Image 1 (cartoon, rainbow, N blue to C red):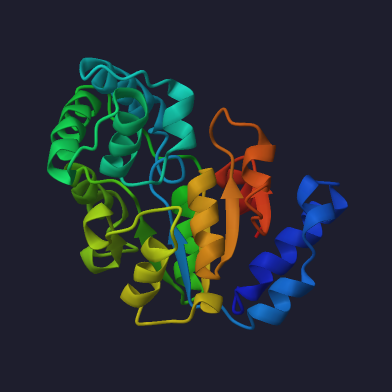
Image 2: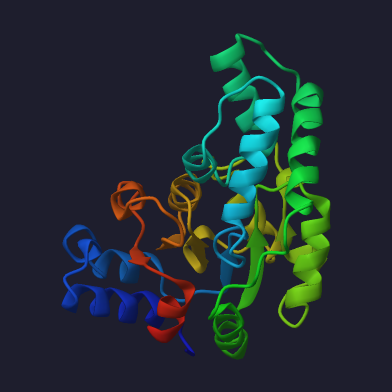
Length: 253
C-alpha cells in the first residue's frame, strides 16, 4: 500500500470481476486519472466505525415522538450524516409547520442524545482496526468526519482509536455550518489533514447523504452498506465502489 491509489485500483478490479453493480457504472480509469497518490482516509463514524445506527434509530424515533413528530427507523438511516439540528428543523417544518431556530432544534437533539446514551454501547465493527492499521502503515493520515453533535462520542473516538487519530483529526457538527450532503465536512477534514487536495483523500461512508458529500468534495468515495437500505440507494449517489462491510473492504486491500 505504498501508493494508496492501489486501493481504488484493486477494489474496482475485484468488483468488476464479481459483476458488482459498481462495475458497470464506474471504471477505474477515472480514479487513476484523478488521484495519482492518496494522503489521507476520511471515515464517517456511525455505521462505518461503530454499529451504532440501530441505537440512533431507537433514540430518534422516541425523541421525535416526544415533540409531536413522526420519524421512522428508515428515516434515521436516510438522514444519517446530516447535522441532527438540520434534520429536526426539516421535519418540524414539514410536519408541524414550524420554523425552529437552531437553539430550539438543539433542545430536541439533546433529548435524542440522552435517549441514545441510555442504550447499550455500540460495538466497533469487525475490520475497522485492521483497516486503520493498514492505512497507518502506508503512511496515510486518518481523519473522522461525523455529522454528530454528541460530545461523549468524540471522547470515545480518541479512547478507541487513539493509536491512529487525535482530537485535531476529528470533524463534528460543530466544525461546519453546513453538514452532509454538502461537501463542507469533508473539505474541513482535508483542511485538518494539512490542507491536502480533494483528489488526495479517500472517503469511507455508509449513508446516502455522506456518499453524496464525499463525491461533492471531489474525493474517491467508498460506500459500505452496513444498514437496511438497498444498495441502489447508495449507488445512485455515485460512489467509486460499494462494499457490504468494513471487513470486506479491509480484505479487498
